Length: 391
Image (cartoon, rainbow, N blue to C red; front, side, top):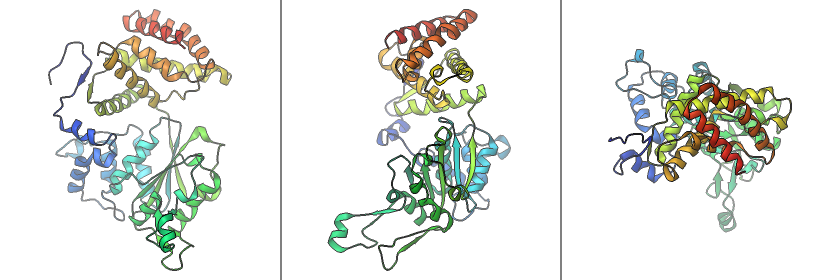
């Protein structure tokens, strides 16, 4: 592709097949986005597959973590989730067992992304999802009814509307439950019989009133560790899950890889190729590291930003800055734009967050600017001050 000097954000040609496919679906689920990789892995997979899994546990791991030279595959499988290998392996082993998998960790640690990748590789469908909220009901976990059909012909299997969880049971697939601890306790406990007995009773029907899970069914749930105390899981439900804790990414190299990988994916939806200047990425990583250190040293909530300062929020800052540069800037990503995006993303409470970040900017960021003595840090410093002046 022709490159323009100093142009770090370039449009992909209109005839690009990948861009054309993504025009059809705003966000492709993992099984569609990586269909060629999944088909290839299935074609060479001679490992033992639990139940009716599409891939063996070894190939599921390869799909998630990427291939290695020692495997001598004909094509390279890219790494999609960046984290401890042992975490991915424990998650895969859990899903092959009789217990559900609960991924728990701070916001932005990749819980939902790992859950989606695992479901895509294991059963070829990651869309059997229940989104947990304070308003989630037991019907959304089990089943509901087509009211018009019930009025016309009474309750029957034909008038029953299966939940995503029931559909996963019927198809021997992975059911996903996002933000489990956001649901009330009575709704959470609807999962107990599903996880233990592996069936759902339909007491409204006289005959054919039990839906049994087919081999291969299991549940991947996620929970935000910051929601502890909101709706604690019951002891009975905890016993039916294996807990896998997702740590906050602290390794700078790993965090950089995650940010670049996810930002590239997000920009591809817009038809952009992305080249983030390494110096600006280092500025972003250092600023977030300093913000976390400042937050950890704070003695009260008033001295902390409301933001979790996660890797996901860094991705959001970078995406916002790239799009702003593309549509309203000089098309090349600039430090001032990055700073304005960071302030705009992290400031949520007014005036509390403005006070916190203003103090941080005039102490830590100014010190970094004086030490680095580079144009990037100086533009970043000024861009942040301008953004705070608009709040």
